[in-house]
Amino acid sequence: MEHVPPPAEELALLDRELAQLDARRAQLLTRRAWLVSALQPQAPNGPRWSTPPVGHGWGPGQPWGSAPRAPKPSAPRSAQNVLLTLGGLLLTVAAVAFTLVSWGSMGIGGRSAVLALVTLAALAAPAVLLRRKLAATAEALAALALALTLLDVYAVHAVAAPDADGLTFTAVASAVLAALWTAYGLALGKLHLPLPAAVFFVQWPLLLGAWAVGAPAIVVGWALLVTAALDGAIALWGKGLGVRVTAGIGLAVMGSAALLTGLGESLTADGPLGAVLPGALLLTAAVVALAGARRAPNGYAQVGGAVAGLAAVAAVGGVLRAAVPGTWNVPVYLLCGLALLSVVRARLPRSAG
Image (cartoon, rainbow, N blue to C red; front, side, top):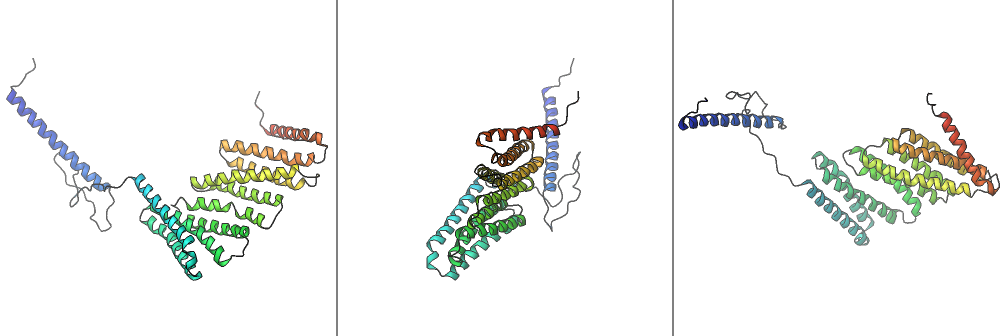
């Protein structure tokens, strides 16, 4: 039979075991505190870590002259972001109000000096904030700086170049802003706003420049196609999700506009010679789409391949359509599509057996 000790003896035994458990728990807590302190970054002139003293029946304890530091309380990140966003919006509204209300009461020198100083301060502040690891505040001030640069463009046009053509000035200003925000975004790589903003400004110089000089529709189509090709390159090799998404949207919009321009010019051409230039635009668009499809992910590659095929059919079919009677227009495009399909099938590998 199992021996059952008397209650007094059993109580003494339980007290000894509980005391051992308390001692063991104290050793484990001491060891944990030392490990937490050792994993935290040390001050430049702080004491070096040494082997902690050995506890009773356990390994290293807490280091000499150190104590575990409790984590500093911080506000929720979402609340900080909301407050910073509201602060940035208020600063932007204040800057717009100053420009629109107080602009007429100041001289030219005062206007330029105030806006230039505020813009430079807003552009320089994010660099300081990033060094202090205040990324959200830096993003808010970068957004304010973006709005201020747009106000600077308006100020330059209103004061320094009031007689300049609006489209020409906007095209040049877009190119300057694109270069400025590209350099700014590359210099401060931790900011998420500057590079997508630069991609947005890239969309306009060629298109607005073509409109400003009164270029024909085919030249506008080429401007759209070159911009779309640049967007495609940025979407493939750009840095950051925001940059690639912005470039992808620009590629879809500018590329579609270029294809529609070329197709419209091809369908309204008077003869085969008149359809050559739109056909060249469509054929170049097909080459660009095919080159992008070869490097794009699978889903986008299929879309690019389909666009390339349709553009090639429209390019060749448009020239042939202009040389045949109107009743043969649809068969001409169908024959071009079948010819392209046969070429593609001939290049596919044959299955074994």
